[in-house]
Image 1 (cartoon, rainbow, N blue to C red):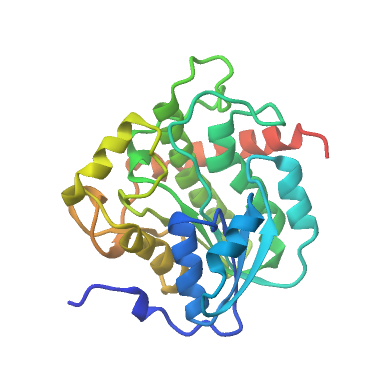
Image 2: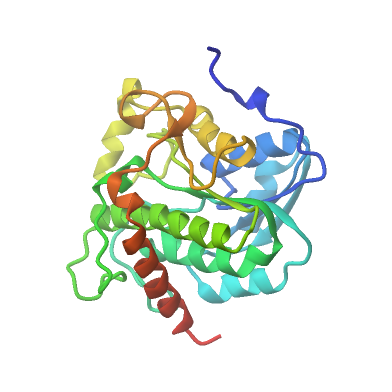
Length: 286
């Protein structure tokens, strides 16, 4: 069987895709390929100048808009200004294993960037979405642990990698509960997960875990890692599908539908996490 590639993306003329963190890395590759297939791609980024430079001269139609997913005010401003349909929302922006830091809203920066911000953004844009939401997660969600009483690392001692793992597990549980709610409401919109495996990007450049990027036999190139996002965004997969590389441990290879870790299929925890997160974002005055 021939491996799936970006050449297998269907024609997307007339469709609108919003991608967060699309100014570089996997997000930029995903934006480039979807635009090449005919989609109108909106790059939702912190640095609009760099994003415009990144897509200058690329085939397709692009729109660059300001969005910082670690800032709830920025998220609300972006959502409030949106008009029209969004066929596909790709929650791609993320950070990995960063030092302890608080956002302008007082939340843990890593958790907010990877999970809480995308949770709010998705909720605010959901009425505009016609096809699917793609959440970028990580195989490391399998090592994650959720503390429903301290999602924001206020009472526990902060640990960068554990916070990353927890945030990516939270993303998986968010997809599970979002799909449950969509199905219950009779909505055709799908919630889909994508893991790039270990892609050799700058995401972990500052982290001790970056050593794995030098083990090329274990990793995907950025181009190949982005295929999971592209597959999840364009193929006819069931709601709450988990798309990742087909190689050993989901670390590298071509995209296929895999299975989340057991903790990511815990419906009770997913429901409680949703309520706790909704309470967190609601606590910040508009």
